[in-house]
Picture 1 (spheres, one colour):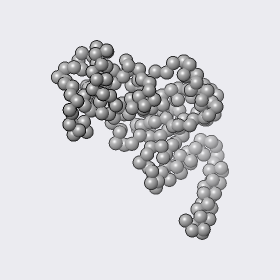
Picture 2 (cartoon, helix red, strand yellow):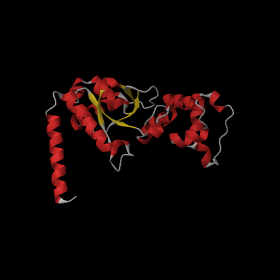
Picture 3 (cartoon, one colour):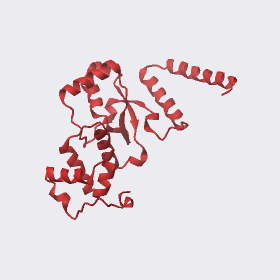
Picture 4 (cartoon, one colour):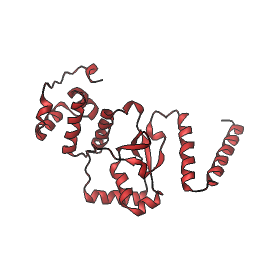
Length: 218
């Protein structure tokens, strides 16, 4: 930008700050901030990445999903509490917009920490930070796969809930190749999961092969 452009831009930002500071209360300030961030996000060259726009949403407007396969033991939950208490929220909760509320894709325990601890909730004014997954991932099967990918990338997941998700994906008509690709499983892992959990119905009319055509998993 030229010197004149920079001055004008800074004046606009300063005016925006003054407008937000003049808001009647914190809820109105947060609403204004969310709006400004959303509008700036629309012109961002990085808008295709969900983290480009993080909004603060009332915790009461955020629902959990029914298929989170990540189990956190009490010591780790306490550590998560200490982390948020001392470091603050350093990463948003991944969500999906559904009518008038949001559903969690990843970050169930970060949200639970806010719900269970008044000091955390008071520090965020009852809000939690959200990013929203891409619209291309909006259908249920892709959201379920996204939840597993987030959990497996951190190295933790619950095998019982994991098997439940696999079962539901099969019922949705997703084949073994699709599941392996989108959930990040090898053929052997999927086979072992079915064997360990006794999901006999998942073997019906199924065959495993290392030579799947890439077109078949799209």
